[in-house]
Length: 310
Image (cartoon, rainbow, N blue to C red; front, side):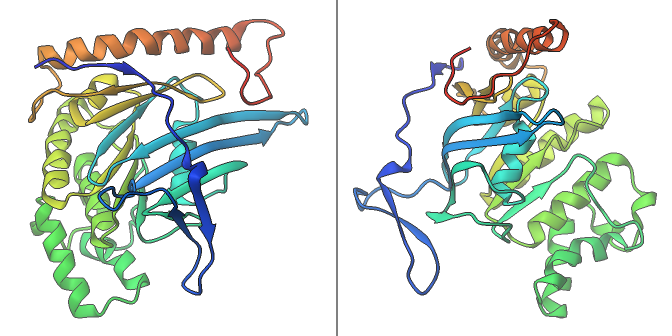
């Protein structure tokens, strides 16, 4: 089965959603929603972010991002370096506010970090003075989960990532791939609905990365989590994703979306994966060339105003 592609449709942002502020907190209500339709798990509406440079100019990093992610969907985000892929995950995680636009999870506005979203970094962020089990238990402890429940869930999620025998080991005693699996177990143990993964396998060797692709797909199938996964590796994206989203060079905009209709399980060396990757790479190369021109062309400055065509 081959993958089919389409250009980004004119997605309807959440303009028809109105903000209400009941006693239970701020929620978004779709006035035109039909009963048989569900909210997207994650919805981004006209999301923009800018920074002030050392020269005092405003640098537009993300420009009017509109994206909807279904519950249980695996979405990979690719684009040239500096296009705002990681920044987009930070906004969804609530680590920083957008300049304008909305981040909505389960129909509720995101105003900051929450236990329904977990961000997994490339460097995994494990605590070297804690054992593997204590690292997995840490987030639950911060949430006030009773000790017996923490220990039960720790054993469950270590078994899920095939590290049950290493519960009492320390991080320095593990390989890179095992450390990343501990980070995944720690994230899953807090039982978030959305996993945000920022190039988690980039520093690993090819063999370990391939094994973790299999592990992550199995965990995703077993848990039904929604995953947004940033990568520079297009083949990795096609190997894992239901849909690949391609961002333009700065300012980051959604250039195209690629539904990946290949049957699972997939392998990174599959001919169909290679062919699908080639089509995405052709469009990505245009954006890489733009980034190189911006890097080396004398006197060229990034565009400042949103909505200006390339």
